Length: 426
Image (cartoon, rainbow, N blue to C red; front, side):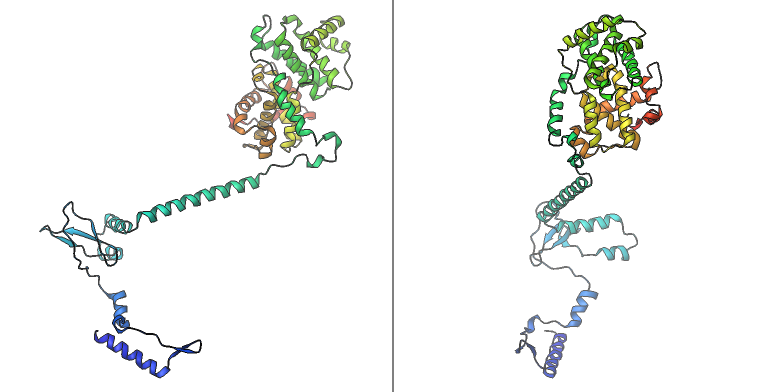
């Protein structure tokens, strides 16, 4: 033991004699310290702060392969970098620190720092790195789940019928079953999107002219919305099953409106008023005869789900205001004129019209979880139909068929035809 250790031991013994033994729990506690493990505080401070690192001398075998990068010290299990000298003998490099490299040498390069980091990384066991990587992945998954839960909490599925529990006309107890039946039977009300190819004397342009005219007649007679949608449905279903000449096409449209009024309206227009609207192109007997032909061809099936019944339910799910409701009906009435929209089922047309109207008003994609739940359509399902609706909205005021645009350009319908289309969807 060196002189510093003897001096420290004598100082400690003197302090113990003057102050007495330490007491813990009422009994004397004298720590037993072996003299062989004692070191002077001055030497400890010197080793920590001011000592220079000396290479350790270890017994090693000469490598038979490539130059060894590092050798393992059996005492402290650390990695010590080695190299070969000019004589081919293995020697241990002098340890350096990053601080000495940066402060002691002006020509220190980034490569030196990288080598130092490689030595540190090499000392970390692989299973530790693998465990840390797994923990990082778990943290990422947990964070994603938390974000999804927060998003769901921000946009929960609302109970849209809770406010109508006391309203017997809302039939809250049966409303889900009713719309489940509508979704199940809506395919029966659809027609083939290519049925016009079987008509020999009419085409889709004539159909568009007829429906555009009927929308104006419907507006002048102040009929219910249900009547218009059922009228168009009766026309398409009849034309799919029966060939018609162009001279009789207007008669088919007028008779379909008469049948729809009898099914939906409280006060039905008389036949003479409809004949006057047609500029007396047909007689009363011709109208009644066409009525018989149509109901027999359609087998008296008038109870079909049109886009209107889905519009009322989906607007409620969207918590719409008056402006959103009017704009949605404006967009879907534009689709009634277009023959190519027959390829979409009524429920999809209704949902896409509301989605397009929301995007037009809010200038961004808006489709809540509540709307998706009740319509059973996501944004991806609606996108194709919605983009077509935007194109119809853009050209609504141009061309010859402007009946819908003029109708919704009035004060009664809130001038919604002047709204900007959602062009960003295109």
